Amino acid sequence: MDLEGMKATASARSNIAIIKYWGMRDYSLGLPSNSSISFTMDDTLSTTTTVEFSRKCPRDSLSIDGRPAEPNETARASQFLNIVRKMAGVRMRAKIASRNTFPRSAGMASSASAFAALACAATNACGIKLGGKELSQLAMLGSGSASRSVFGGCVEWRAGAKAGGSDCYARQISKKEDWAHLRNAIAIVDSGKKAIGSREGMEITARTSELFAARLKTIGKRIAEMKGAVARRDFQKMAPLIMRESANMHATMLDSWPPIIYLKEPSFAIMRKIHELNSAHGKYVAAYTFDAGPNAHVYTTKRHENDVIAALRGVGGVKRVLSCGIGDGTKISENHLF
Ligand code: DP6
Image (cartoon, rainbow, N blue to C red; front, side, top):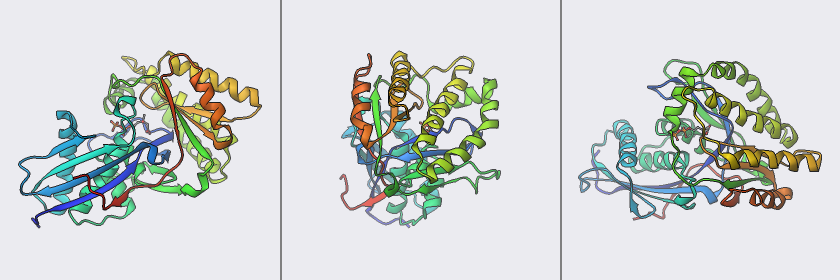
C-alpha cells in the first residue's frame, strides 16, 4: 500500500502517575517491572500531532511547536514510525508536526502525550484501526508512560507476566466524569532538561538498588489499596498512598549507585508545606507526587485548589504554578497542523 497523501492528526494528554513505573522486566520489549496507575490530564497538558506518509518525503522529519526537533528527538520518532511502517507494510517516509499546549520552556515536556498522539496519528494515517488495548501496546514502545495516555480518567498499565508481553497493556479503571472535582496543581521548580533520562535511570536503579527489590515486593499491596480507594473515590485513602508511593520510588533512586537525585531543595520544601496544610485542615486536602524531575504535581480537590496554589506560590524556588483537571484519552482530529 503506497498511496499518496496518507495523513492523520491526533491529540493526547499527559498523565501523572499515582503508582509509578520505574524499572523494566524486559528491556528489549520495554515491559515494566510493575503495574502503574495514573490520571490523564486535561487539554492544559496536551500534544497534537499530524503525520503524513508521502513519497515526496526523502526522510522522516519532525517539527515541535513550529521549530525543527533535535536530531535525537527525530531519531526516536523515526524508530517508532519504523514499527508502524512494518505493521502497515508501508515504506514511505513521513513528515511529522507536533504542537503542545504547554510551553516547552516550562519543563513539562511529556513523552507520554507525545508518543500516544504519534501512535494514534501514525496508525490512522496508514489506515490501521487499533482498539485501545492494542494502541496502548504500541504507544508503550515509544515511551512506557504513553500507554496510559491512550485512555482518559484513571488508567492502569498492567505489567503482565507473559514473556512476550501479550498481557501487558493499559486500560481505564475509572472514567473521567467520576473525577470532575479532582485537580492537579503543578509547581514548576526547574524548567531545564533532566540530567539523566528515565530509561537509563531506571536501568541503573534496577541493577544497583537493594531497595528496588523491596519496592517490587510491596508494590502489589499498594496497587490493590490504591485501586480500592480509586473505586470508592476516597481521597482520604488515596492521598497518603500517593505521597508514600512517590517517596518510595525516589528512595530507590537515591539508593542507586551512582545515586540518582531528581528532587531539589524546593521539592522538599513543597513536601513540608503540603504536610503543614493537611495538618492545619485536620485531613488530607492535597497529595504531592514527583516524576523523574523536581516539579511537584499536587493532587487536590476543586474546593481546596486556590489554597493549595497559594501555598505552593509561597514556597521559595517555585517559579510558577499551573493547574489542570482530568481529561480524555487519544482523539482523532480533522484539524491538520499542515
Ligand atoms: C518517573 O516511560 O515516560 O514518570 O519515555 O524515557 O520519558 P521516558 O520514560 P517514561 O517513564 C516515566 C517514569 C515516571 C513514572 C511514571 O510516569 O509512571
